[in-house]
Length: 357
Ligand SMILES: [Mg+2]
Image 1 (cartoon, protein in one colour):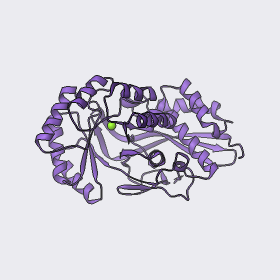
Image 2 (cartoon, rainbow, N blue to C red):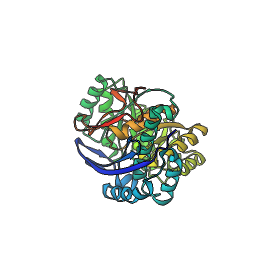
Image 3 (cartoon, helix red, strand yellow):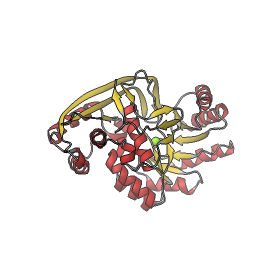
Image 4 (cartoon, rainbow, N blue to C red):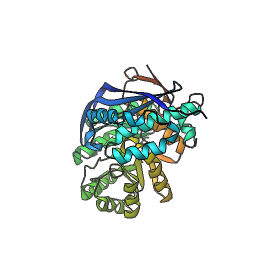
């Protein structure tokens, strides 16, 4: 194979208003404020990578991502993308806290590399399947709105609805009852985004049980550092518990295994980068811990990369890759085809398959 060296790099902001403000226990977002990195190989092949920083989750914002990516330019120019693991290891050693910026670089490099190999990214990652089903998230809204939205999602074909809780226990239960009312045949996933104490989390599940509601999954009930608190929740319910904010690194995943505090790990490439996400998946699998894949507020590019990741590796019990952008406002086209609630990947497109509009 010809060398696939990086010739030029460009960095651009991705500022897009959301259709609806998105509220979770740690705050409200009105816009996507992400960053796009484009690398061009000497062959002319382009690779695209997106960073989706969310300060309360990963400690980065658009300004820190721009600064990090600009700082990496000199190091990256001239590098052969076939050496993507060494590039990733070096960048982690220097910019260890700038995870979404590193994720964008890994995404662009893997996109360009698999294009130069002329295979779709999911095939490069294992090619387990080319179709996956996602849930859809209803954020923290009034019960009346939640009921209407749940009915719409059910009619659109979704089988699982995820909702965010952790702000107010009584309102949380009212909203879940409203979702059940609006979509009685859908499974309900619950994500507290660290919003409960261990006792509140168990009380919350008890109240749901009194109302004959059994969630299919309960994600990150307590603060990320409190693995013993998460273990208390797990020991007091038969509902599967997922660790999300508690796992950014492979070392974090090992701690989950050691503590025995979760049934699943929610992998997000914006928490760990793509290469470290491979390690996390391996650790989880070998410890008999289930896998989930999630996302931040991302365009078709970031979401498409995660679809390739989950489809390529296979074995993901839950997929939470729901788009929150109007496709007309998305700056990209192509990529995995989305027909609610399924993503399918064409074998005729190399890389992530994304095009700039
Ligand atoms: Mg979560």
